[in-house]
Length: 267
Image 1: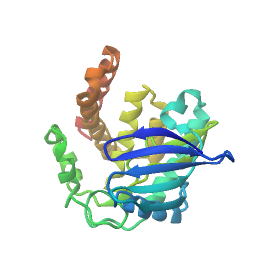
Image 2: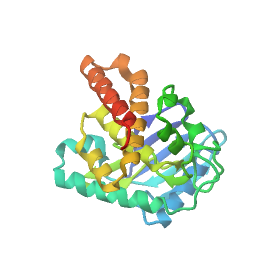
Image 3: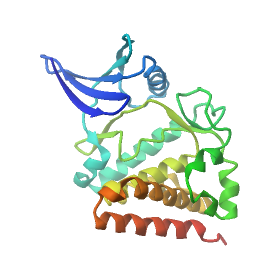
Image 4: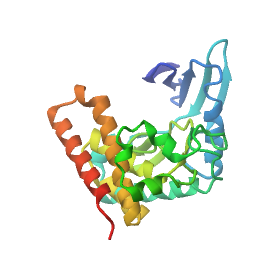
């Protein structure tokens, strides 16, 4: 058997395990003994909804860490596949992802807001309080503030963006990295997908297809633009020093375009 490191972080590392038979599996290690308790629960709830998620083959704990073995999902992340996909393929995947998100949103609403396994008490009493880390939140027009302060705790997958959506030959093969769900506003996921793909690839066809299929009303379009502007601010603060002048210019232009769209008065 061979083991290949795929990703590694402070708490969690992901490996590809290849057996002599050629079969593959995913091995995840976490520095906490309870590190995957939420992951196993989340995958089980999503699998029950019929989502294309990995199968949990085994899980357990050692003296000072936890481990998880998952079935292998072929493909590469959507953000790296888009350049080789036709517009028709991108639309098809967007249709599938929108349908999957709408299915997740049928799970019971949360007791609060934030990023937790399904049914787990959340850390924020309101969606507005969760957004407080964004320094320009108070620049929202009054009608957007009213919207943000009354968002219900709807369940959705926040991180099936350009990441964690696997594609092979232009087709969706599955979703990965499913440690939790989010309770809040699904428009936040649409914005994160849009900003992430502009950041990574300058590609907008796929996220614009997601938005078209979601069919937000005029107020929701402005909320979506406001979320995108806030996230662009975050991306610029996190990554700008290591990116090219062209990247910085692209992200700043997108950020200002989104802020302007958010602040337009709906007539």
